[in-house]
Length: 512
Image (cartoon, rainbow, N blue to C red):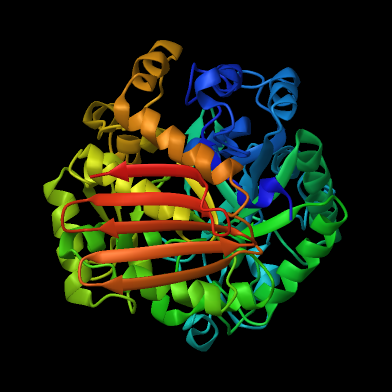
């Protein structure tokens, strides 16, 4: 396992710093950030896209307005490995494949690249007057549709026929000068050989950009079978993942399937049991809960489970979405989770229920710094705990720079713009000013510790103990021992990395 697999990873959009990827490269070249990060997760507006801040991909070429090949070479020269997104389930209506379908209809080579609703459901229901099959209830009773009604986009072919295609996510249709216009994310037909050719071509391209890790977005929606779930369909979901992994292996890529599910469902365990890394979506909420209840009990229990079950994770505090809440169900009580949500909302966070369901909490949108009450001591303690937990630490750029909730950005974004609360773009001047902050300098010191100290290795023995308000996390490898001793009653902590034989101290950090 290389340092790219284990060291800290910065997470940004390509335009988060300085407006372009070149600005981000310039930041990482600064002496203040030397040795802080071994990896960089660049969100998918790196590619040509038209919706959802990059997650509606037209093609996987570099978005020239934000990034150039030279920028990637600068990152490579720094020894930075990339984590990049690959959206398995869907592509933009502006993709060349869908545009070819619109232009040529039945004659298009991409006729079955997307899912023809009527062909998929043939024999499973009755044709309606509107030209689409209404599946019998027994075929769709286990399916979860993310919006009202059936997930259909009626596509007008050149001969005037209206053909329904599967459309799980966003769609918008309007007429302009007598011509139908579309926006949206069209589901790909994984039964089509051309889709698998596209998958392999895309993985090869991402490897060429310098990718080491591929985050699989919306992978659980890709396999669909009449009568089964259309999310985490079994065994089809795992069969698709195995086929994608075989392709990724050709290019030395490690897959990171992304999925939100409650702790009680155990999906994280099944993903790990099949040999994949999994996101630790539990850690962000557990750390805040530990601070609010002044106990390390649940964090210690979770750390021990990760170690004992050999679960490989990418963990985080904040990210481009929100602070996960749904994931905690089954790990914390419902009452405790609701209390946690109340705390975050009181600190300015925004609650988004899951697809409009009133009794299903999903996430709270806030910067992690604001979620901690904009308390420097709590921010540093949270970072220290993250860096001592098992897994690869992922660091949202605004967390590093102690970013506050951006309400003006939410207002500018309008309806459904709540996620912009935690996506403030920084100028080079902003970065320079924030690098002078004590909370930023100390975070960078902790990140360099995690990046450069050899005790933080997949071969290390990790232990976790909690007593009252205290939490102790320890790593041991060879002669080296790294210990974090934290107290959630006053946010104090001490880190010491020592050679057990000589007693020599390699690193020490104290927040009294």
